[in-house]
Amino acid sequence: MMKLKNGTGRVAGAAVVVSKTNPAEGFSPHTKCPNENTGVYSESYDPTMAHCNVTVWNPLGNGLSYEEFDFPIFSLNDDNDTEAIRQCYLGYNLGVNGSTPEYPLCAMQLFSHMHAVTDTATCMRRNDINFSINPEMVCDPLGDYNVWGSTKPLNNTAKGHKEGESMVIAATRLDSRSFFWDVAPGAESAVSGFVTLLAAAHALHNVTQEAHPPRTILYTFFQGEAFDYIGSSRMVYEMDHKQFAIDLDNVHSVVEIGQVGLRSSSELWVHSDPVSRRNNSINVSSLIDTLKSAAMNLNVTMSVPSFSQPLPPSSFQRFLRARPIPGVVIADHQSAFSNRYYESIYDKAANLNLTYPANLTEDEQLEFVTETANALADLATVVARALYKQAGGADAQLINIKAEPKIVTQMLYGFLVRSNNTWFQALISYFKDSLIIKPSSLPQLYSYVWVQGVASPNSTERQGFCVRSSVRLSKAVSPAFDLLQEYSSKDYSTWTESRWKFIKARIFLVASHDLEMLTLGVGVGILLSSLLLTYIISSKADILFSSGREPANATY
Ligand SMILES: *[C@@H]1O[C@H](CO)[C@@H](O)[C@H](O)[C@H]1NC(C)=O
Ligand SMILES: *[C@@H]1O[C@H](CO)[C@@H](O)[C@H](O)[C@H]1NC(C)=O
Ligand SMILES: *[C@@H]1O[C@H](CO)[C@@H](O)[C@H](O)[C@H]1NC(C)=O
Ligand SMILES: *[C@@H]1O[C@H](CO)[C@@H](O)[C@H](O)[C@H]1NC(C)=O
Ligand SMILES: *[C@@H]1O[C@H](CO)[C@@H](O)[C@H](O)[C@H]1NC(C)=O
Ligand SMILES: *[C@@H]1O[C@H](CO)[C@@H](O)[C@H](O)[C@H]1NC(C)=O
Ligand SMILES: *[C@@H]1O[C@H](CO)[C@@H](O)[C@H](O)[C@H]1NC(C)=O
Image 1 (cartoon, protein in one colour):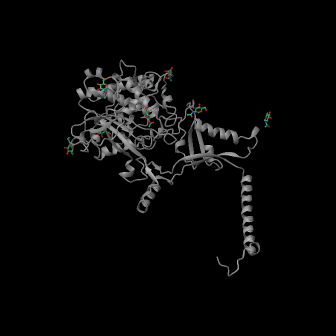
Image 2 (cartoon, helix red, strand yellow):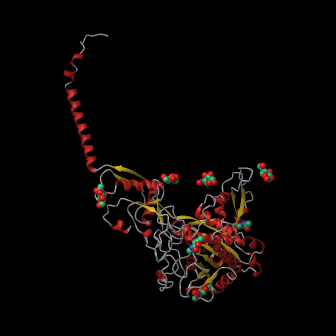
Image 3 (cartoon, helix red, strand yellow):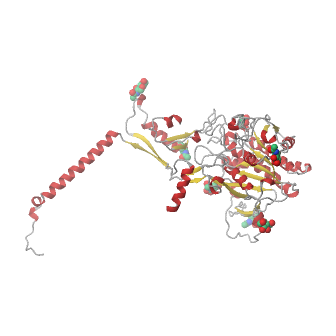
């Protein structure tokens, strides 16, 4: 790709066929040091740890996603349509025995027009100018919603400090990216972590209802973290400025689940920040001990990397940027990532070794418990027990906390193999007119969604039902845009996305230049001779059509 980019400038576009098997040598279009400038490790925090000085987290990163290409690049699945394109190419564009191919040639036209120009600051300014004349945007801030929920409902109308609340935050990231639009499966980089946290939350549900621990557990799922921590930086900003249901003083500690799907043995790694640990009031050791003891008697070993190693790229770094808080990041790698396809199209089910016996139906696959699911369920149990303990819960309850491998396997199947499955269909929410929450005080504590439910065996009608939960959405748009309007901020993500016209491509045969010129020449010749003929005919019309003259006095 770099050769094409730096070459003669004759490249008009590229079409990439995505191979069905992952490249064995690994592939990551991300950088070697993800989110290098927006984490906690700046020159002022600790110069020895800035810029991945101690550990290069993503050594396979080639930075392709951060290159500017001034031609469109399309990805094609290796299917029948692509086979037609390949046949067209092989049939027309390969010269016999290496000679120059002859016309007609197979051509492909790619349409992918991007409106945006230069950088975010320029294009956001242009948005603002345009808006007054005609409201047509050229680019939009990247953004979505963070998802959060708590073991005890929080009054979401009352923002800022909650007196007497102490919260243990259990965090993970929710999405991922890749070089191509709309193909970012993020199996290891996002799904392994959020499936584990969801399974842990599920395992904790009954126990926290019956014996709620003294502290509240706050589950947070951050969006847009691959783009300089959009989601976590927004939530931390809101906590810092009384715009969130709690503030940073309410935060007791943070447990983050990173990439956890690729462990070769039972060993997982508990990463922590060496800088804030120097402060004796930041008690990370007890949190690590809690995790270690929660892992006992389970097929998981919690190990600690060398004391001087900084945190891997993680949302927790954004909390540390605001203030020292005790916290850990759990991951399957001791130093560099185990993930060889970080933020690429290849970080898919196969990367997590999700395989199903060949003869299963779709519904049987959904229920089939894979090795990966068992491993993640074990980890979810450890995380759930450690969270309960960290929230001050009683040891006697720990035995009742157990994550279900079946739920884990269903989630992995749904998020990585087939999202249109019977289980997900039953959980899809939809609007129901008749559902109006009357008591106005209720939505402050809970959110309500109507879900489709399943059809009973003897009917086709789904039995929908209403779900009351403490799960909320909060904006995941970088504060640099809607709150601060600092489009060239160094502290917050400033990624924007260009508006674009429809994306499409077509293939056709082109004739040779000579043939085209000949066709044009013949056309012009015919045009000229017909003009000449018309002129001659009309100028000699009285001779040619003279016999038709009528006498002036003729009557009809
Ligand atoms: C692709 O082509 C093969 C062979 O021509 C055919 O058997 C198969 O059904 C086609 N697949 C699709 C999805 O059209
Ligand atoms: C191409 O090369 C092969 C081997 O050199 C030869 O047998 C064949 O006749 C050549 N084909 C044409 C069309 O020249
Ligand atoms: C939630 O907070 C709002 C604003 O402080 C307050 O008016 C309301 O009564 C609270 N609701 C509950 C259920 O505590
Ligand atoms: C240590 O942490 C506490 C609690 O966050 C903070 O108040 C204090 O300033 C920190 N001390 C140093 C030396 O950073
Ligand atoms: C992948 O799964 C297969 C079948 O379950 C197993 O034999 C193989 O060892 C697994 N590979 C890894 C790297 O876990
Ligand atoms: C999902 O699958 C059902 C059949 O199980 C099918 O009727 C429906 O059209 C599918 N939906 C989508 C969006 O593919
Ligand atoms: C469906 O079957 C169940 C028991 O098999 C029965 O109780 C129910 O009334 C049936 N529903 C309808 C709509 O026939």
